[in-house]
Image 1 (cartoon, rainbow, N blue to C red):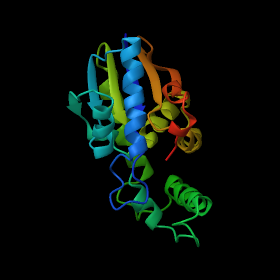
Image 2 (tube, rainbow, N blue to C red):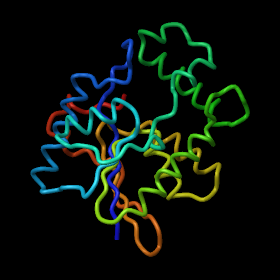
Image 3 (cartoon, rainbow, N blue to C red):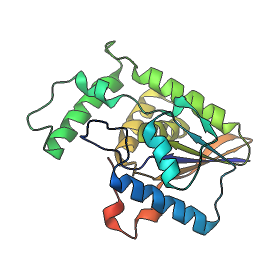
Image 4 (tube, rainbow, N blue to C red):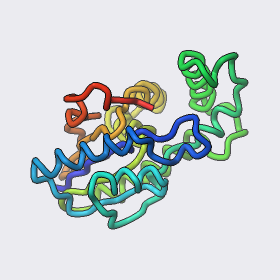
Length: 213
């Protein structure tokens, strides 16, 4: 039986010139994850990272080194998605206004009715599914450092067969993925199954370490 540990990256640098860099908080979150794994004696047999800088930096800040890069685990382009919807007043300074903008843009992208995206939702989920299938064939314990959108899709795919239900699940799960949260999957004779979603007890001793963006 194989085991997959899907790890969301630490907090990135939201609002900075380069989002794809861990914030100081992101480095602390990843270090906390590495410490708890070391304390538990958890040593993955292999480590896979997506192709984004924040994936690599999270892995390294946890005290680990990647064995393989698989860009299939990359996040969707949120900048592209947001650019298709006019920003409401205050979106650059008011978190509530930004959240409204993000949810409106997500709904448009999810609907699949517009062809003006570099990567559609179905294309995004297709490549994540392919990456998940590749990882599921690996023996032993594999840690995958990736993003919230990819993890949310992996779980939605396992929990539902209907496409519309999967989209709704993805939308809900993606909102609550904590930075450095760990989702545990197992692969056996019946295929992949989920054991736990978004476990982040390594952060719960310090509430200021918990973030979702």
